[in-house]
Length: 368
Ligand SMILES: Nc1ncnc2c1ncn2[C@@H]1O[C@H](COP(=O)(O)OP(=O)(O)O)[C@@H](O)[C@H]1O
Ligand SMILES: CC(=O)OP(=O)(O)O
Ligand SMILES: [Mg+2]
Image (cartoon, rainbow, N blue to C red; front, side, top):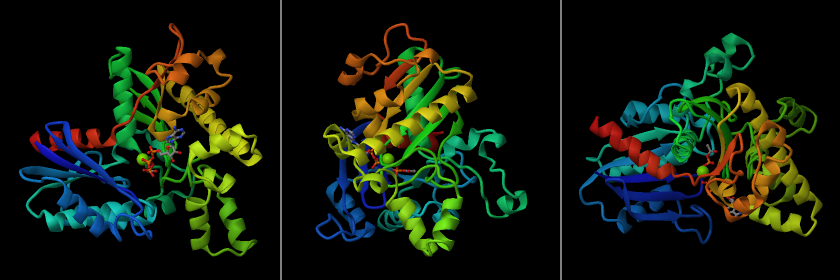
């Protein structure tokens, strides 16, 4: 089956065209809406995509949708009701759901006879126990306003956990894997037997690890303080915590490559940011070892996880008493397995492939 996968981000659209699982075309439209960018808005971006690939015989379009609430635990064919649900969830994923929705709207308009299938970042985490998704706040308020942990990057965590089990020759149904998706957004996940048991992002993709422009975990009182004492309007606080926090907030740069170059030259802000970023990863590894009762493997993935040996080494520093060690040569080469032979916990680097996983789930949805 020929499947077009769209991964619409806040300022970019990644697309891949698959034919029976093989990539036959792909591309990236960047800096949407910026001066000198590839397109003035998502509609124009998608029009470019449709014009540049041969869509004859297209069987489906698969869309990455970040927030699916509790409604969806599987790939879902989009109808008006599904589109409305995605729209209603915009307040919980303000950087992500609007882009996915415009992708869906444009694709439905331009390809009205082709099934549109949404694959949700949240779906994989629907397996987490109630105790792992419930915030200890007023239960009536939480219930009324759907306040709970949802978790994100599920497509990526599911994919790399499965690939890790395969690499180690472990049955996917029993492997215990801690997956670290370190991209622009970043999250950790404890995967037990192929099911998500815990994850670091929460109601929105804002909590947990330190990210390119997002803070990760903070005390919620920071928001009251910035509002009441510093006098900042709520919209401005949200903007600050989602777009001007994380590495960006600590250094003025959101790209880990730049942070590393500055750190290598002894820049104190970049050094601190690197330490905050890698320490937070280590804190979550400790948490998830406790949740899983030990782990067979720890797997790094996404832009930073796949390409930054120094981040991997720093994140796992001092963990050898827990059986977690890195072989520096393997780490610097970026081998698939970067722990020494015979180490109790295997440390892996596995490139994520959200688009291939989306295509796989779309094909499965439409053929079974
Ligand atoms: N060689 C590298 N060393 C360190 N970080 C890198 C390297 N290459 C890419 N990155 C980081 O990866 C991030 C993007 O990751 P990616 O998974 O592509 O993000 P997303 O899909 O969320 O946009 C960049 O912001 C950059 O910081
Ligand atoms: C959910 C999320 O944070 O996605 P991304 O990493 O693509 O921003
Ligand atoms: Mg990403």
